Image 1 (tube, rainbow, N blue to C red):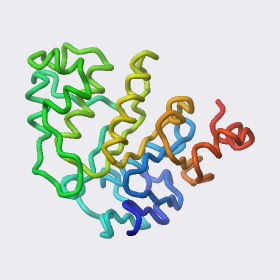
Image 2: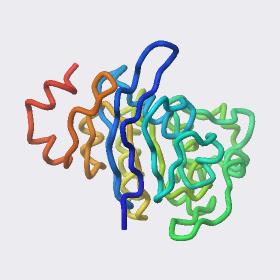
Image 3: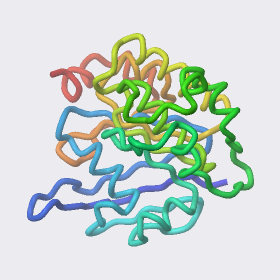
Length: 236
């Protein structure tokens, strides 16, 4: 079986700014891959390019063996890619249950099937506030709700953009447990992250991006053992 996601020679621009410069990596089914790098390295742009939110200028993106570059974001989502942006985009006036209903999509063969009850087992806090408006929740709770709503689409791959950003340490640890639980369900996750401790808890492999170029790919354990690479590309 081939890779779940294959990215090759991906280039993208914001206006005249050349942000992604030949990005390439692959993901296996059931894997957690951390896309790491400093602020402004191109992590979020990579995510948006995969989802069609930033149209790639060149290169290819294949998902489950089919080309998806050039498709509209809604088409890419329907094929089974869920996207959790860095900005927690909840429907603030809708309740938790109503937010989950918005994300509901048909069953998809070979991937976990999510229901509100299964999600409340994963996110107990959400289960205790089913009727609460999303706008009355904390930042961490909104982040959990955004992930839960994405899972209601029964995706086979989830793109998580900076999930630990701005969260209290206790919530970050809860987020790590959640990702490990999803990994146990054989869900594939591409994680954009700056926090090495957090990424190191959950990721199998890592790809480091700097100035729009992939500089390192390898096992997370290899990165942890390589102080030179960490200092060169990840230290602030």
